[in-house]
Length: 214
Image (cartoon, rainbow, N blue to C red; front, side):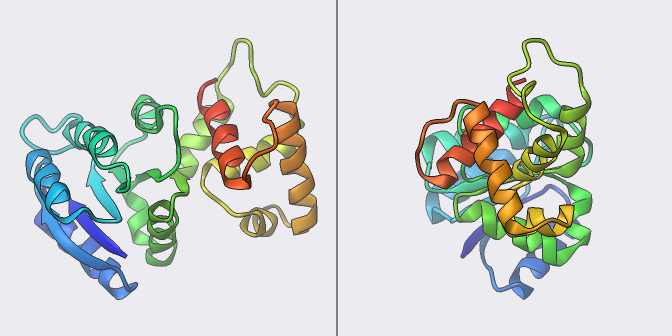
């Protein structure tokens, strides 16, 4: 799997590169700013770009804007954005109307190499990865005309874990229930959100988008 790593800190960048190479990824390029990242992405067309949200020159949202540009111009390249702080609006803007091949994680997640590599792989393969802290904030806020109002507490827990990009087995392990029970909850979520029969992955993305849009 071919990767570009973009971060203005050389130390952070090299650390992520070593971690990814140790996990079997091929890092084809590195970048320290948004313009270089986009240029490298065009040249290498990687499977995924891992991008720091704050890069030169203003250190505000250059990484986010580069990620959005890559999604628009190179739809086959997944993007995983890393942020030092929880910035909900950035997560929502990044996912837009299609969560496939998109991830938004806090930088601290890099400190757990196995889970981080797992998230990178999942996003590169067309899945999604939303940081648990962002999910927690979204689940906790007040909603008007909540499309999730009909969900039970357990179903909301399952949907929150789906938003993190977890598989049914991983959800089952986290909630200490059977995978069959998770499947029943997921089916119920689809029905309550009026998601018509379609590919499982597609409906999971739509369910996550319903969750994010509230």
